[in-house]
Image 1 (cartoon, rainbow, N blue to C red):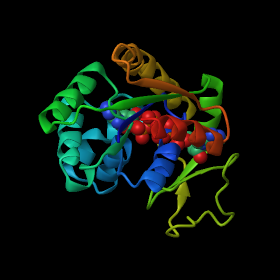
Image 2 (image 1 turned 90 degrees about the vertical axis):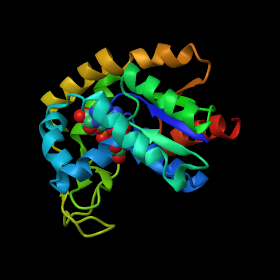
Image 3 (image 1 turned 180 degrees about the horizontal axis):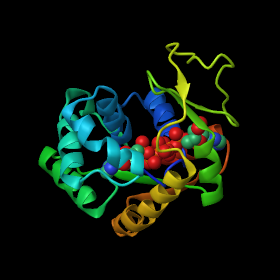
Image 4 (image 1 turned 180 degrees about the vertical axis):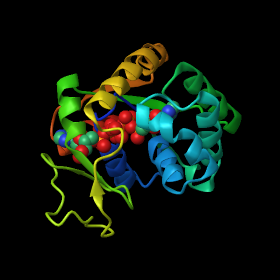
Length: 215
Ligand code: AP5
């Protein structure tokens, strides 16, 4: 099962990817998590991309393709993977396709999760994450403990640097310009499905599961 979860910031890609990972036991590859990890570790790459992440712009295609191509050849991807937040541009989608062709994997499915923009802004301004392990909370839909410590690792629960309203609006504008064209790119290839993300987490997962079980 080779799956791309597509959708604007905050539609629930990460939340659903974790559930798919648990149910189908295939790795969840989030380019956002990989980049945030580099920033946290203050690596050379992390120092280079921090400003880009904080502004809501996209990291250059070449950098992203290098990261993903390296990740996809690891042994745990042999039976499939879930890509969350990648591809985000047409050159990234073409890069992924040629990587899959090289590896002899042709079957890719793309699921777009969609919700209205006012709901996106609500979900992202109320999202909180653990600064240490990245576990995701939401002060409205999935509240963190009152002591502000992560239930998984005890780390501090914080607002993500790019979850401020002006940055969210820029991320949405970047999505419309650079990522939305991927919808018609994949629709043409007949591997594309859409799921309504404005339902409970369980209902969204149930819709995704039906698509995956019919693959
Ligand atoms: P990335 O981390 O990929 O961010 P994103 O795409 O903006 O997605 P989010 O993580 O914000 O949202 P999500 O859809 O995963 O939603 P979640 O499940 O958390 O990228 C960050 C940055 O890295 C980019 O801006 C860019 O700079 C860079 N980058 C990454 N990939 C790149 C690439 N390929 N190319 C170039 N640059 C790249 O849910 C959101 C909230 O809603 C949570 O609080 C959750 O609890 C809640 N929630 C989820 N589902 C529901 C539901 N059904 N009902 C109610 N609440 C829900």
